[in-house]
Image (tube, rainbow, N blue to C red; front, side, top):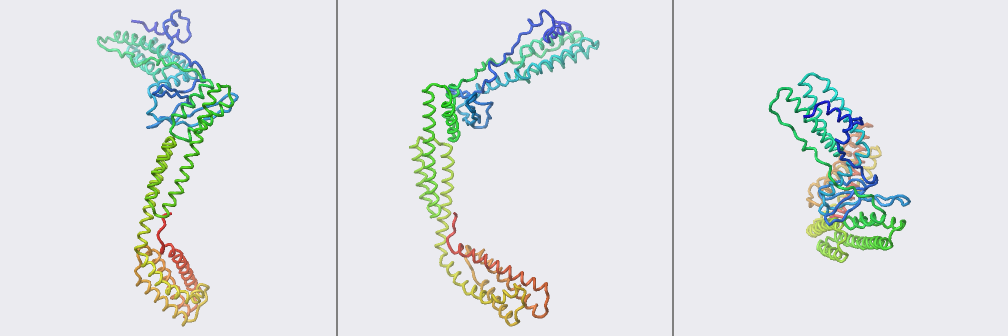
Length: 464
């Protein structure tokens, strides 16, 4: 067993004291990163390694990262990179990220926060040594042990070996205190929860050639054409502005040119397909879009199937276009079925509209708040009563139901205005005159709307 005073002495040595054996008794488990500019890595299952700027975001199916190129005398660029998780060595990538986090913590806040911990626990040990209450001394030691045991795991594995050895010393102290308290049976919590720091070496910062090689690998991995183009464009710019092997510069340039050519070819394919699909939708020809889907798939294979994401999205668009073309085709079929009924309705409506026009002088007078002569009002009222009865007798097909309802509303509102006008022939009343004018104006607006809506209703419905 080791006494409390001995633990305090070892602790003092850790804090920079003069105990001759303190530093030899505690082995440092920490090493700073080999380079403060070390970059994150994504390790692939085929042993290729990608450089990323900072950590990646882990999504269910992919990693979203940032690729940094340039620096120094060459302008920097930051491009998005999406890596399918199926290609990633996830355990190795995660382990390397943990080591980088730990290294960054050790180089920035580790010493300060560890000093705060040791200062606090030194104070606790001093209090423990001063106390004469056995139960209180045991409680203080157990709290200190729990605080120390979890600290390294909560701080990126910093000072793991040091905290492991100090926990072992505190375990001896706790055992002594329990024996002194009269306990004869007890168990000690071992320090197995203090895992050693993973021995993953931090790779040095890449030179320009290595960063360009990994840029080429990144472009080959991503399935997003826009990301591939952006990364290769940045790589080409950096290669042109840096001293790199001529062969590497040529490979970067060739990759960019091939990708740019592929982009032009796919854009031409999509533009032509959009034009064809638009015409097929307007003509109601879903079979034409089905042929187009086959043509697009065949052309994609000829181009090397280099746009899987874009092709998937475009195929969904073409399928939507096919559904719209089918809807348009059904609209044409329906129009053929009801064409004669549509024509009959339009013919029946013409004299009704002529009847409205014949009474427009009376309607205009009421709208202008001028009371017409009573005989003119009576004639107009009879005419509009006839119009309403004629419209009520019509049975339009469903394509005309909305337009027909607006026509009927227009006639009914005009009849309200005429009835108010008849009251004005008995006694002049500004309020009634205003209501009559508003009713006539509203009726004219409804009539104009119905006439506008009638033209497209008489023709096949257009989905586009």
